[in-house]
Image 1 (cartoon, rainbow, N blue to C red):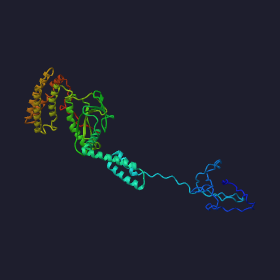
Image 2: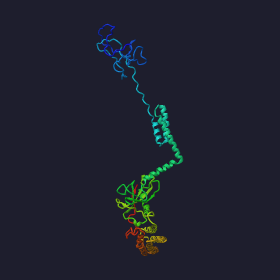
Image 3: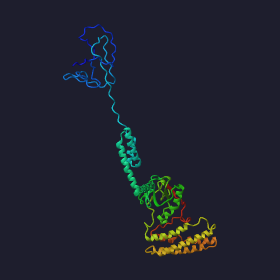
Length: 454
């Protein structure tokens, strides 16, 4: 078996004699079949090599492979080698071009997007019905288009089916409604004020005014910005507006103040009333609560110690005494804004209410068993209350303004007088009247509350 010679200048055939100079040989056609009996250089494109010929790239045993390792697939068909100019042409036909080049690697089939969506919805379990439907659609599309993602579609369908079964079970047993109520309750609690009645706090800002969404609870015994003394809820599905919230706080917080601080004489002069109320945003989450707050009249000031004086902090004697005198104080605060000259009949009706309240106070104090130090001071106070009651009865029966004023002044003379101060000292209560002589009603000046929305 012969091996084709390497590329290079062709040598004259020894079987032939010398030939004369040849002209330039025409460029051979690479696609022309080789002459009969001539084997193309390298292995045939298809089939087995002819008997007696060794495929290109393989060498007989004992021979060194010719040149470099076998050629890789060429980027384009080889051009046949041509002889150098002036070189005689003889020998085998030019090399045959390579066969068809390598085919590119097979591209992976695309993943079905609907299968991905089905798997995501199945894992999240938020819309199980949609995940199940998308899984079925994905399986149909994958079969039609030959796409991948069948496993994701099946997993999404299974997870969505389980989620749908759980939803049906929750609806049947009422668990879903319970979870929804719990969510709404949590949202409401998150939107409402974070401290409750009897707790003290520090606000994040320098003052209590403005919007405050969260505060830090601190012990009431130390210095603090505010103390919650009452809570109540508004009603309605539609937010009534900031003005309505403020009006509700003014109307409801002051009665709650009297219940929290039953000893009104113990309330310092530098204490003002604030409130935390719902905003339009928190109302949508179910927040209806208004918290009534004690704070310093100076917006940048603080309070020290708890102001609470109620049944949780009072003994039986103190509680009985305060319940009696507070009822009288409440009636005095209901005095008409007009003068007796302008509305004498109205003042006579009010004087009658004072008389009846004093009568109840006397009976209430006498019904209680007083022991120890408070017994004599309370008895002296009861006698003064009886004298005051008599004067208010005469004021209620007055026919003219002058007579009314006479009994009006005499009746007030016994209110919060020396006997009241002595009895308070004996009971361990505050003994300094909270109002001046020119403001005997004890209402103070400004009755409006300060606003804090949360």
